[in-house]
Length: 236
Image (cartoon, rainbow, N blue to C red; front, top):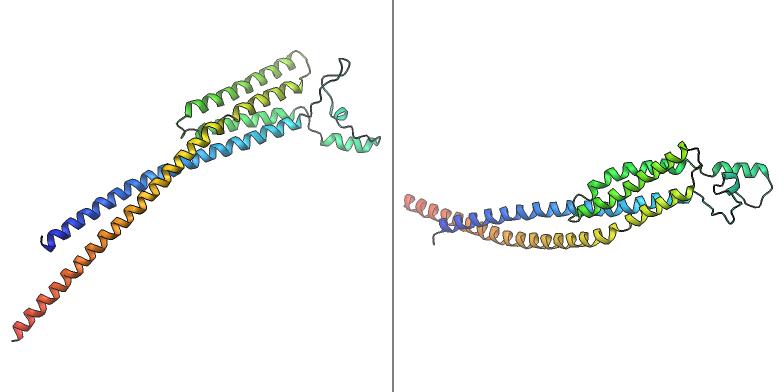
């Protein structure tokens, strides 16, 4: 086999390996992107559960111990620190969240759910996650409607109902990592395999490239040798 034919074969081999490397790298980038989105989905769930838990804590609900006690307690009733200092109690009562604050938090959750559909778009269980988000939205709708109906009838809204709605939403959200984390682990394994394949291909490419370079050097040396012989013949 002549040097020229060998060089052509090496060139073709390099081209094939470079093309294969580009395909692997492209697939690797897609996997990395998917892994990042799935990871963000887990983080989103953690953030929102913490958000809802804070909203539930701010309700400051106390269950009535008898039928004579009011179902809804005012901020002043809730703040009982054993102090007879009216000024101190007034100051503490101002720090107590009002009954309208959970509604603000719930409205913010609705906006977050809209963004959540993107975080789960890369999941193979996308439909299952969309169903969870839909159920959370339905709880939100029922909560808002019940609160509006109570206001229309002139009834005082019971914070226990808000607490129940939040607890149901947290329960649904806590289902997400059970499905998402194993899937992300699977993607991470695929990424690791692709990275190893890319490294192996790079080594093969380097070997072929070195062979190709040695062949070029040999051809160059041969050309220099032939030119030197011809020069000697011309000078003779």
